[in-house]
Length: 197
Ligand SMILES: Cc1cc2nc3c(=O)[nH]c(=O)nc-3n(C[C@H](O)[C@H](O)[C@H](O)COP(=O)(O)O)c2cc1C
Image (cartoon, rainbow, N blue to C red; front, top):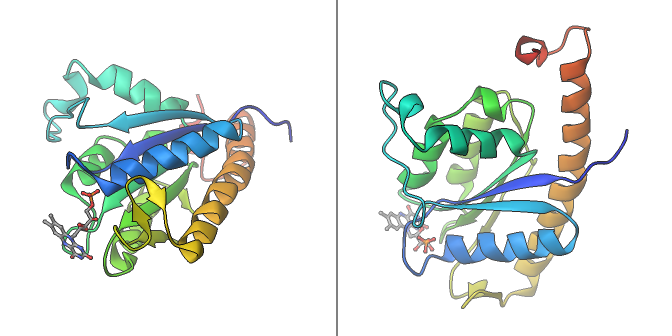
């Protein structure tokens, strides 16, 4: 398989002014870029996304540009806080705008949580599955102040898991992206056949 530059859409799922999710997504973006990945950071604090309404969302002025950014991505990396054991409304609002554009792509989650974020990770995996997307076979979560502080990782165990996650994002993102492109161009039956032009 030929390697092309990997595109990651890095989604900040918190509107909190001093968001830990924002800081970890920006750290991930910086490190992925240093490894040769093209990263597009989506920050709803700077680019507000209206609450999803199926009657109006697809005709909204900002929708075509956002759709193009999602389509350009090979990997959807999401940083979300744990809100009531679930993903944030900002994250879910973004996800509700798309499904076809996610199909065959890799979802990666970074969860700010005091409780390991397991239910959040599970719920993101459910969304990915419903949209015919893949997800990493593990989640990454961190506790603000214990694992991550002032934009820096301060816990060696979390550092190792974060590094593993970024490595797997690159490697499995590249593999899945190449296979997705091959399947879209092929004619044999596969789950992506319905998305062929
Ligand atoms: C409405 C709300 C609900 C929350 N629910 C949980 C929860 O169920 N479990 C948990 O561990 N933390 C919970 N938290 C704490 C946040 O997940 C935590 O502070 C996180 O670091 C915030 O991330 P942010 O700075 O990116 O917004 C909640 C916070 C808020 C505001």
